[in-house]
Length: 433
Ligand code: CAO
Image 1: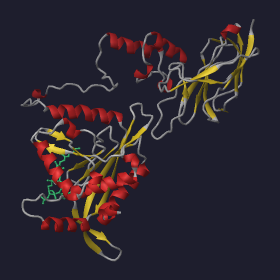
Image 2: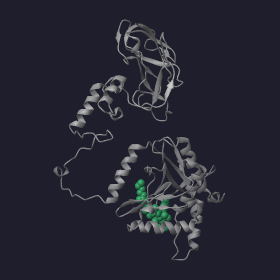
Image 3: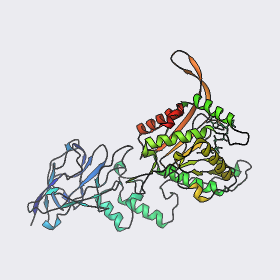
Image 4: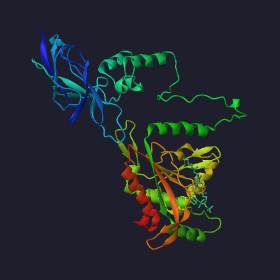
C-alpha cells in the first residue's frame, strides 16, 4: 500500500529561520530512505535533511534562499510501502566556530537520549524518535552508515572533498586505504608531519640529544598547543611603590637572609585575584563538560635549569607570608637547578607564573600549563615616563602577559582578572583586605 508522507523540518533545537541552501530533489524523483532532500544552514551549523521514506517525490515546497523552522513542510513523498517509513535523522553541523555556544545536533552515529517528536506526518501516524548526539563531522547519513560498516570513526576524517568540505564515500575509502598501507604522512591529529631535511648538504652540523626534560616538555607543550584555544592578554602595571617597599624590606635583612624579589609579590597578587575570580583556579573535566573549581591555592613557578624548564609547585600560597614564600622559592628553585626535585614537588599546581624578568623582554606569550587554565608571564620592569594628568613622571612599569584557555575564560574575564592583579600590585596594601 502506498502512503503519501509529508516531510517536515524536525526539532532542531529552538532555532528558527533556518536558511535553505540547497534542494536536492524535484517532483517525480525516485528517492531512497535517508537520501538527503535539502541542505539547511544556521549561522552555527549546516545540516542535511534526510528523507524518512523510500518512494517518489510528489511535491517540493521549498527552494534555496527560503527560510524554514520546525514543522515547515518540505516535500510530499509517495512511499513505496508503509514499512519504508523510519525515523528521520538530521546529520551533522560543520565544525563550530570560536565562541559559539553549543547547540544540540542530531546524527545517526552516536545515539544518546531519544527525543520523542514526530517530524514527519504519515497517514497512519506512528510515534517516531530523533536521536541526539555530539558529532561534528560533515557527511550524509549514507556516508556515515558506510563509515560505520567499515569501522571508521568519521570524526577522524579531517578533510572532505565534497561540496563545502563534505565527507564523501571516497574520502572514507581513502582514509581506510591510508591506514592499510601504513601511510604515515599524517600524524594522529591529522597534522602533516614535518619533513626530514638533511642539513649537512648545506654545511657542517653537529647532532645533540635533547635532555629528557626537554623531550617530555616538548611533547606536553605540543599537546597543549593543539588542544587548547589560547589567548594572551598583555598589560603593564605601575610597581613603583611596591618596589620601594621591597627595597626597604631587603635593606632591613641581614646579609645571609633571603632577599625578597618582585616575583613573591606577584604570587600574592595572583592568588588574591584567583580568590576574586574562582574560574582561574579551576580545570576542565576530561570530557570538557564541567569546570572543577579548586579551593586550594598552589602555584607553579617556571624555573630555568641547565636541563630545561621545570615547574616546582609552592603550596597554599594564600596562607603564607612574603618571607616564607621567598625562602620556599629559593629552596625549590635551587633544588630544581640541581635536578633534585621530587615528582610530588612538581604536582598539584593551580596556576603557573613564568618570569623572564631577571633577563629582560617586553612581552611574550607563555603556554598554559594544562590542565591549569591560565599562566602569567612576567618580563622586565623598567622606568618609563607616565602622564599623571599634569606632567610626565618616572614610574617603574612591569609588563605582564596573561595566557588563558578560552574554553573556560572569556576575553572580558581575562581583562578583569588582569585588572585585579594590577590593583593588588599597584597598591599592595590591598592584599590585606
Ligand atoms: N623586572 C626587573 N627585574 C627583575 C624582574 C622583573 N620583572 N624579575 C626579577 N628581576 C630581578 C630580581 O629583582 C633580581 O635582581 P637582583 O639580582 O638585583 O636582586 C634579578 O632580576 C634576578 O632575579 P631571579 O630570577 O633570581 O629571581 P626571581 O624571583 O625574579 O625569579 C625564578 C626566580 C626561579 C623564576 C627565576 O630565577 C627563573 O628561573 N626564571 C626563568 C623562568 C623561565 O625559564 N621561564 C621560561 C618560560 S618559557 O614559558
